[in-house]
Length: 430
Ligand code: HSE
Image 1: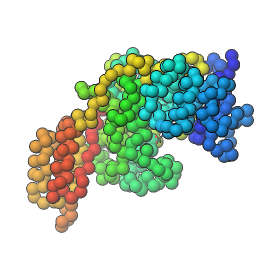
Image 2: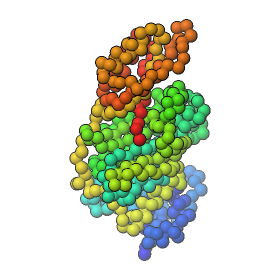
Image 3: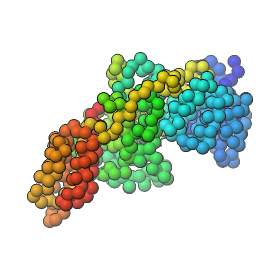
Image 4: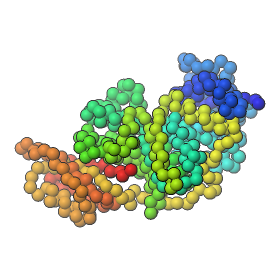
């Protein structure tokens, strides 16, 4: 059978990895796919760049969008990135031209995924996205195929390696966020502009895609509550340890009474839980189904090898003619389940206050919590202030509603004896 002809858009870390992997494992891939898979054409910004890739017989195309209508190309691989611009134009044009698309682009799928799924179905070709979520971990396949018989109740995980690396370093070295981030940037583990990672956006893009697949619901990035890790203080990491927790940036989607809750924020996680020990740049995803119970997947969430592994797995599926619909069901059958507002989230909270060390302060704080019907599980004041210094007071609450907690924090923050904005981290029961 004729080899599957790939048009590769993007020759950065991921694109380079795809070229290398297809060359390194050409024989075994051909056996598994039932036909050879070869890169026929590439489009990349800088053709002159030294890349050291096996690209001898490969055609160069100046404008990636031309791959969509190139009749010698069977499938387009989009690894350019960005929710819009060339990546989206190429994807839309390729689907319109009835070419399958393999993409690693979580931002594009989080924002335009439902429209792209519809376009793919209208054209009768697949769009595949294993590399868009958690890099080398085959979580899309696991949810959409391996767990296809289950009703998924919750899916959550560590979906951003940069944040997990920073939090792990903070935990291990006792250093603060800014110092660890600066070092991570120097070592090339964090981007020069780290905001997509450390502000939780990247994890939220991936969560939106996962939730679409898990709950067969139109992808709904706008409904994701997002907080990053900039406000996590070294002192909170110390307190977490003392209380038997670790702090992780988790991305969580689950069914609730009010609909599907989607949130990304730092969490206190029981130190006994396996996910609390997924450290450094590693990602982890836990998917819970009603029949299968809990399943967990751990691996590298980024980098040339892991991401190429996911892209090429999709290419093998395309070659086999076996790619399920993007969100597990036909776009017309996506469920109309509402998004649960974050204000209705119910959970336990860790709150750290900085207070003047004088009589009556805890009484004032307790009065606010009483008025909001928030019950304290434990309260910790570590040190006695020397002279007039402020001291940290840490509280852990019983389960309460987010809206009540937000009102309480606003009132507590306004008390004269509370000398800095309260710090809150949600405790996640896993
Ligand atoms: N920047 C991401 C991370 C990898 O740090 O996990 C690509 O999505």
